Amino acid sequence: MKIAVLWSSPNTDGLTAAARYHISSGIQKTGAEVVDIHLNRKKLEHCRACGNGWGTCNKTGSCVIRDDFEDIYRTLIEADGIVLISAVYWSGMTECMKAFVDRLRRCEATQRHALKDRRCVLVACAGGTGRGTLECLQDMEMALTHMSMRAYDRIPVVRYNSVYMLPALEEAGAAYVDRLKNGFNMYY
Ligand SMILES: Cc1cc2nc3c(=O)[nH]c(=O)nc-3n(C[C@H](O)[C@H](O)[C@H](O)COP(=O)(O)O)c2cc1C
Image 1 (cartoon, rainbow, N blue to C red):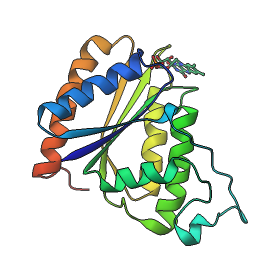
Image 2 (image 1 turned 60 degrees about the vertical axis):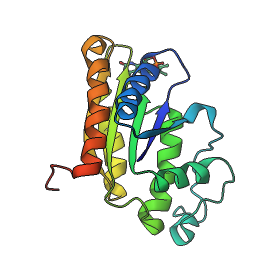
Image 3 (image 1 turned 180 degrees about the horizontal axis):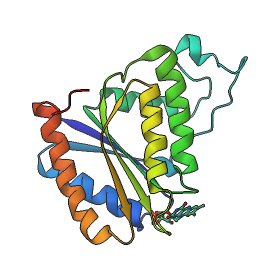
Image 4 (image 1 turned 120 degrees about the horizontal axis):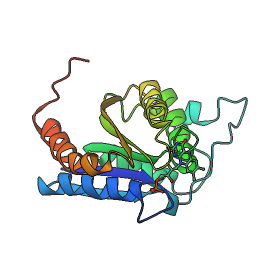
């Protein structure tokens, strides 16, 4: 079983990186493989809203920009599970995460539907006041909803709760693999 862990923060030793480490450890302890994608290290432009605004992706399902987007998209399609982890910037996703999610939503929601019904884990990491963590999770979930995907869990990590949330992320990773294997205990 393969789980794609997409994460975004420029810091490889910060709260987001720690969250990614702990959830990945939990996933790996079950024997599942983690495909780690550090979005800040990828070449990812933002959506150009080309054509009349709906973009050519509306008809083709692929983006006209030639960068790392399509490879990452394919990795998600091939993965059994998807975890999205973003640092909280301005009460939302990082610009890198948003650039990726914006383009994914356009291709996926209008044409490709390759990720439809996938259940994902969302994690938001706020190292400041902690304000905006829920809005960040909400933004990510809204994008999933537009793509007919679902959030299996939404996990807020702030610097004040990291002492207990980081260990909890290990259990979350293991529980997610278990659900992927044995079915989700959700009715929607
Ligand atoms: C541009 C910017 C905006 C930020 N906005 C928020 C915010 O709205 N709420 C918050 O709690 N922290 C905010 N922070 C702090 C980040 O969430 C903090 O740096 C966090 O630890 C990011 O994860 P990292 O340790 O992996 O870098 C912001 C940081 C930056 C650089």
